Amino acid sequence: MRSPRTAPGRRTRVLLAVVCAAGVLTGCQTLADAALDAGCEGTESRVAKLGSYRVLDSRPRGTVVPRGFEDLDSGCWADSGEAWLYAERTYVFPGGRAEVVRHYRRAAERDGWTPSGAAAERLCFTPAGGDDTTTLEVYFLTEGVLDAEGSTAGPGFGSGEGYRVAVTATADGSAAGCAD
Image (cartoon, rainbow, N blue to C red):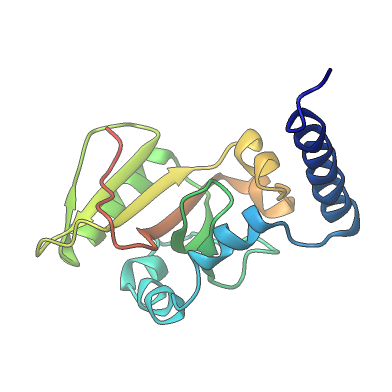
């Protein structure tokens, strides 16, 4: 004889699976998605502040803005379970990576950012003054990075090194440093 709790538990699991599947198939938001989006509520002014950093518009002479990346990309991203705020620009430089690295080291330090680590593929800085929630990153784009984010390397990328300048912060104000 079955326990009275076994059958309802099984029915509940089946019902929950059906509801979740229906939400995915119809494009409706699940409770988990709603919880993730809640981490982005009320962050508009902080996103705007990230977009105001001068270093985002700084670039070495000769740098071009590739087609499809003309505007500042900014917002709140909560797909990973933790909400992150970001403001970023994408550029292509006709020279080598070393010149891009030199330019952004100078520009970031001039604007009060402190370098962290010495990774050749990615520069990372934290702001002076004790703000441990914000970082500045400059990193080079590969086809894999662009594919992962659903972007394509249009014709502008064939003329040099594609890279991104991004200022990010945690939405909840928790500490976020550079990953060394």
